[in-house]
Length: 256
Image (cartoon, rainbow, N blue to C red; front, side, top):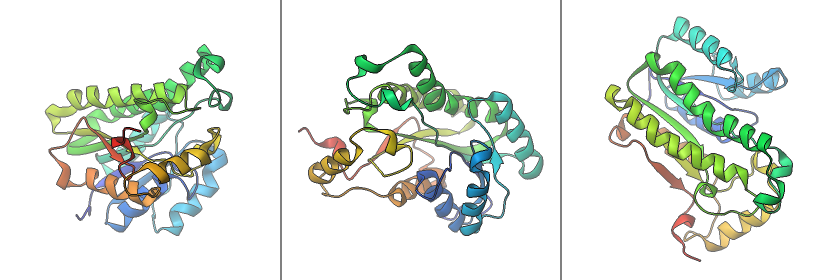
């Protein structure tokens, strides 16, 4: 599955443990023209080094995905230099740390609810809307989700609700963009030790549960997710849209 000549934007790289970093790496190895964005100035030097380390020559774009004006600027810069996109990888999720602990009702606040949904769900829709007229036919948009979107995961709380919103958005975006042959999908990954995961109370216990209860009896890696993203961004997945694909060694099928 050669991705040569495809322009693909990968958002949300924060470290070499980011799932989006592994996705950018495998896409670059497959010959895609990988464009990378990061959230803020604090991450700039780190992300430049990471992209250089894996052979991506393009300068990363600083873009806070909660700011539509910054997305518009990034879009204009990309289109001017590279023309339209063939793919977007959305990797953005956040909720205040104090809400990722204990029972949902004990810690939820209106501000926390709004922040979680703004960052974790709406930013995907915002990217799709702003880039809509600059996506090539058969382009592919993917986002990253988690089983907490449809099952209770202790301490995941408001993030689970935000991910449910994200997965529903995938379906509506697939319908909105389908007439241009553009497909939209989510990957529901098993737990991985990323910077974002470190904010969830009891995360190591979640890893233990997955390893013990999944059919394959192992946890997944960011490379496992990257390979699925590669497939979804390639022309081998042109009949798949509006779906949430589980990459969790089968944990989601278990009933205990």
